[in-house]
Image 1 (cartoon, chains in turn purple, brown):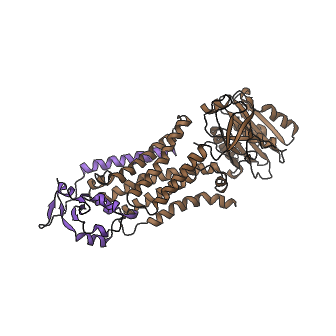
Image 2 (cartoon, chains in turn green, red; image 1 turned 180 degrees about the vertical axis):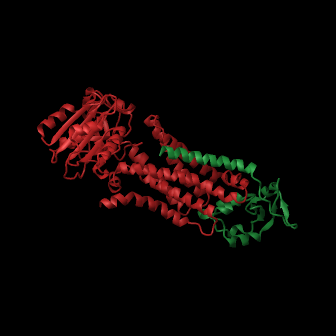
Length: 120
Length: 418
């Protein structure tokens, strides 16, 4: 049992270290091309829209103004509002039971799209 | 009934794991992400099972096949939970690795989802540290116990991690249940609230480092039988300064008025301090547990005792005359360590069914092959009952197996509850 603990823990940290190294050594996938008409939104601008009445969120590289939709969102406000003005990609991908939002939610989200999240 | 007890723990573990996995089973997600979700929920289920298996309740131990078996499974299930929970973030990262290595790293160490993710890391680190302490044999018991408690905090943190991700539907009751189980163990059992009050009525030195203690009940006594063990904690009083920890001791006699006798060998700090126990010291007794010598078949018996491992056999000899021919091999380091030797010799002289063989082994491991042959102990394929230090048990099991004794005829209990 002790050997299992030691080997499991060692393999875990080796894989974490390998992942840390991979982000430097492995090439990044090509970034999706931004449509010409899209407006780039800087993180600083995103963070200025962080209140329920003016709530922007960055999800998977796009920025959405979800303020009009917030009153209809099924989840409790305390789970959604902290993501206003921030990158909410992981939260969007891990709702109840750790599942991402549905395809219908993706379609709904598209209606609130403002543009792409630009690099700083 | 025996089959139910045999299957009870595997079924409990299966139920604790399968129910949350079934509830959360992903549908239409990439394989790595689905695996991560299943690993996370299975790990949480196993943690719950592990908590249930650490309770020291006589009724629960009865249904789950004994406290020693519960603890064996508690260790296995806890380790399995740890390994699954280690794999959980790795599978999440593997899913994101398809996009890019940078994205995979952000899943593990995000700059945004701070609370829930870091709580998940805290849970993993607490489990890691708690298990490291669990496997450390050099730590003093008291330090070990508090470090082991880190595992309990790790369990609560892992559920809080899921709760903060917004999954409150089944997690909130699960969190409450885990907190109740931890509280039950910590407040009810470890702090002696559920144990019966006793007082030390008499003490007698059975050898240089073994003290036999007679405990008189102050309320309804525990219903112990010969060969069972109880968890006993002594508290300060009558000039004695106690360590207040529960330790397992085999009952060496059950008297008619509900008094219990236990034998304490000075093996650690706390048991060394117990050698100075005097009449009037308050104690708490929890149990009884174990069925080591219960339901013995009508057959020849071989009892092999090492050191303080003589106590369950002594209890049996004190409780009634033998029914079946029995060979008792009693091994001890030196004559000064041979607790209860003269009493055993008196019993053997009076009971023709008991053949007593004793040996002072010194510091060398005994030659069990020679000893068993000299005693003729294996004639008639006896039922073998072993009690002693782990090294002696392992060697004895190996020797008996080599002599053709089947595992189902070899019985022993492991009293190591770390």
